[in-house]
Image 1 (cartoon, rainbow, N blue to C red):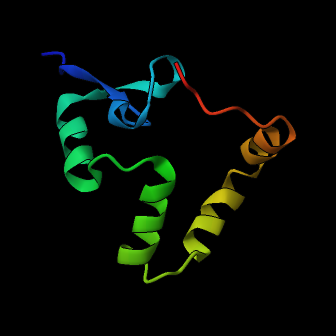
Image 2: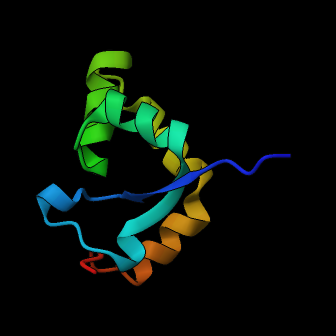
Length: 87
């Protein structure tokens, strides 16, 4: 089986002061292209706002439900807030 090519993806785009380290994830090349065709250089909070506004008719309910499903992880983050990755 042929291994798919992977690209480095910056969660916060380099063009918007996104560095390396925890800000980089590996995505398959096709996934990376679809991501940027869909979201351009939006950062995560802008993507959530975009989805809520254009796809979910301003229904924040869906975001709240997703956060509730991940309440343990959210609790851990809120008890020890991370700083935004810079490098």
